[in-house]
Image 1 (cartoon, rainbow, N blue to C red):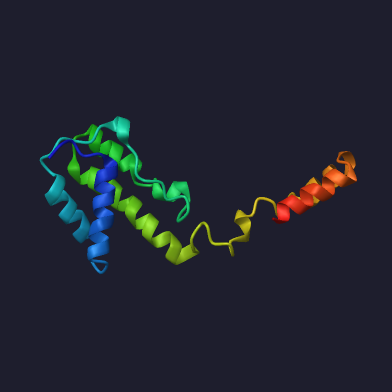
Image 2: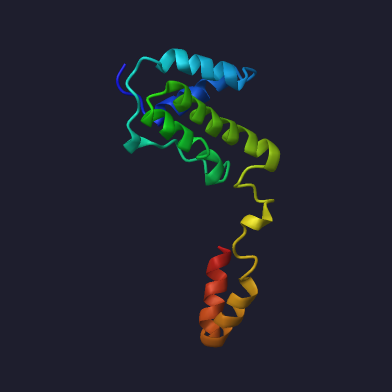
Length: 141
């Protein structure tokens, strides 16, 4: 096997969970360790996992990367895999506990909510009425 990336390991962990959703994280970790131990360690230049911004905040889906980095630096597969499992757990559990990040019911994600009134007021001050009407019409479509 060629040198795996952290992304490869994470995707493999996701695949294991998809084929056996009832497996606990320690079982996934054991399977990953058996598959990847003995291989070359991932390069630190590619210390990343696929982005999951639409599911969980970045600080959650990247939570295990410091542990993974330590594992790579110390050449310890246990830490490498443990970091991947931390990120996997966060990605899987965040939607169950908080709902998905892209859920429209999460009003705090609506960045316009706090500034809509001030923006409207400022636009009215300098934008001619016909341009304002055009902008409102085009924003509805």
